[in-house]
Structure formats: structure tokens, C-alpha cells
Picture 1 (spheres, rainbow, N blue to C red):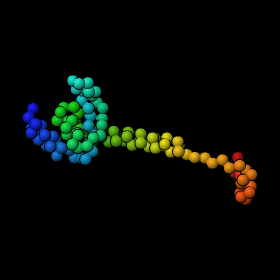
Picture 2: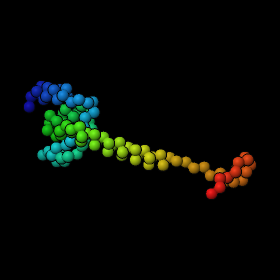
Picture 3: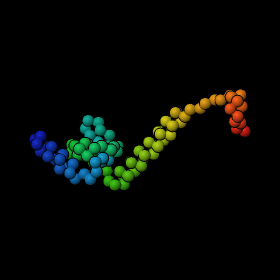
Picture 4: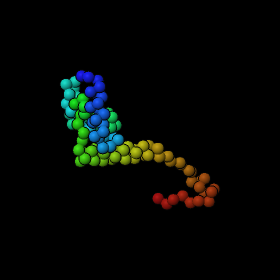
Length: 106
């Protein structure tokens, strides 16, 4: 393949893509590529994958579903991280009496 033609096709495809971050759906390839896996990539990488026949651009519904799944996974990971960082301080009741505060009733 002529390299000029290859890069021209990538440039043309890149111009057609509407967003900076594009969700693509992988296609089955001869070198073992698994079909149907959504991924968010840069516009340039999406154009390259599409031109090479390794992926296709996701439609609006697929992209929205993928991004919602990613958002939920991020929230869950943030909650786990916050729980891991939660710190407790154990204050003996004698120290609380000295400071004039009452321990909470349980």
C-alpha cells in the first residue's frame, strides 16, 4: 500500500469523526482480534483502526452505553478507594472525660 494514500485515508477519516474521544467497536481480525469490544480512543487512533479494518465507529447508543458503564465503574472504584482510606481514631474514655466531652451513647 502506498504510504501517502494510507495517511491520506487516515486524515480523511479523522476529519469525519465528530469527537476528540471516539468509541470504537473492535472487529475480528486475522491476527486474533476479538470482535465486539468497545474502547474509547483518540480521534487519530480511531481513524487508524477504522482504516486498517480493525474497528468500526460505535453508534450514539453504543457510545452512550459504554460511557455510562465506565462512569459507574469509576464511581465504584472511587467508593472502594475512599473506604480504604477511611481512618479511625480511638480515643479512650478517660481522655474524653479530661477534655470535658461525653462519649456517645451506644
